[in-house]
Length: 239
Image (cartoon, rainbow, N blue to C red):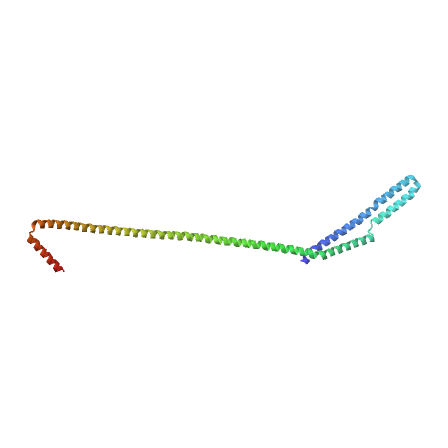
C-alpha cells in the first residue's frame, strides 16, 4: 500500500518542484523590477537639477544615465546569490516533502487501506445480504410451489373423500330402504297370518257354536253319551 502511495505522491512532488522553481524565478524577476522605479526617481531628480543648474545637469545627467545603465545591466542577469537562494529554497521544499512523506505516508496508507478494507467489508456485507435475500426468495418460491401442490392434493383428497362418503351414504340409504322394506313385508306377513288365525278362530268359534246349537237341537241323550264316549276314546288313544 505504501508503494502505491509513493507512486501517487512522487509525480505530485515533481509537479510541485517544477511549479516552485517557476515561482522562484518569477519572484526573482519581480524583485529586479522593483529597481526600475528607483532609477526613474533618480532620473526625475536629474531632470530637476538640469532645470536649476544647466552645468550641473550635464554631470548629473551623465551620472543618472550611468546609474540607470548599471541598474539595467544588473537587472538583466541572474546572480549567484539568486541561484543560491533558489537552490536552498528548493532543498528546503524537498526536505519538507520528504518529511511529510516519511511521517504521513504510513498514516495515509493506513487510512486508505482501512477505507479500502471498509469498502471491501461493506461490499461483502451487501453481497451476503443479496445472497441471503436470493436464498429467502428461492425458499419462498419453493414453499409457495409446495403449498400449491399441497392445496391441490388437499382438494383431490377432499373430492375423493366426498365421493366415498357419497357412495357410503347411498349404500347406507339403500340398505336402510331394504331393511325398511323387509320389516314392512314381515309386518304385513305377520298381520296377514294374524288376520288369518283370527279369522280361523272366529270361524271355528262360530262353527262350534253352530254345531253345539245343532247338536243341542238334534241330538238325543243317547247320542250325547255316545259322542262323549267316542271323544274319551280318542283322547285315550292319543295319550
